[in-house]
Length: 457
Ligand code: HEC
Image 1: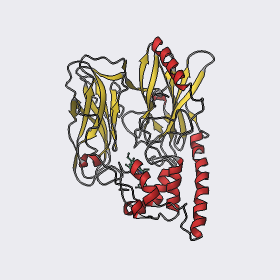
Image 2: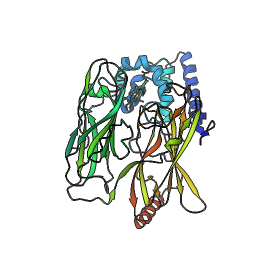
Image 3: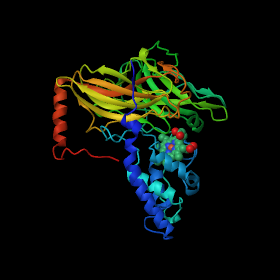
Image 4: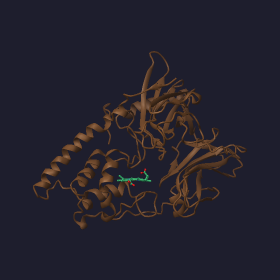
């Protein structure tokens, strides 16, 4: 079974139309002023208007020695990229955060995305000749604490994955590495981070997803989904990423489990070692947090049926029933290179059936982004709620990641040229009483405000 979709809002890119009109107006007026030969208040300069945006949202990756292809630290660095910057930010391809801002929950932890007015500033700057402006207006250089240090405090446990020798040239490599945690009793994780150890590793490692797996599960099938049995822990991708459990929850690490990392490495023109570590801060021994935090692949589309003809856009659906009430804390789409867009819909139990689309995001295989809901909007759902994951695959030439739109594509977990569709869902279970209490607390918190949807950046 498959449904061919041509008219979903995402493919009409309705989301971009409004801001494109707004930008167009802004740009036109800037050009008029420029033609009049005046340096007006409306003129955007690098030093005063653009650099602060780049420093906040871009340079953690766009600086020497980091994962991005070029530095954006200085005017001279950024000037040649002005048009490319304009394009990437107006299509919301940079910074990598592909959330659909027109649907569902709009409050996320660590949302790095640009506001519409920031995008407009960059567009106006690029269109009006990308001028430098007064060097005295340049903001202070951000204070880069070494990206390779721990951001979770001093870890109680550091797991070192075996170093991987990446050849100087060749295709990107995907695979897994395993190392023991060495734990002899069950422990709850309070904070966890994966890091790459040095600048060579930083260049080589595109992303690295860590899992806890059962002993004996050596998972050498090269499965980018963690071998199925793994409990997802944390991701390293391009300059991020530490994960902190909510204060009343923790991730259970069972005694004797192994750490497994699923990696994507680039060659960098010279042979290099990729070294990845995992740092963990535990709750004290014997401490059991109120809630156990889970992160699992759910709403898996029924894999054997996946069927994507050449040159077509196909929708797939997957469902998982939550047997107990829950608070959903995080959502991370997962597809392969034909993946284009994914939504999470909740189908509530009872009659008449009520549904709610909570999040949708574009998909780019290069970026495995976790969208963590802000606490005050994280969905609180009753037992029996169905998670409905809707995945769209674009097997046409319009998908610039598509290696071969002339080919049929089927399901597969191992090769990125085969397809998958599911979501990583982060959640913790609630008892019936906790569920009620959470709902009451949520309503109380919403009382003073009106129920306006807060349109977001
Ligand atoms: C999390 C790291 C990260 C952040 C944050 C980030 N970038 Fe990037 N950027 C990359 C990487 C990696 C690439 C190359 C791969 C790709 O294109 O996806 C890239 C590519 C680009 C390109 C295309 C370069 C080319 O070769 O054509 C532009 C332009 C760009 N980024 C601008 C920005 C701007 C502007 C911001 C901030 C608003 C930003 N990026 C934020 C990592 C990042």
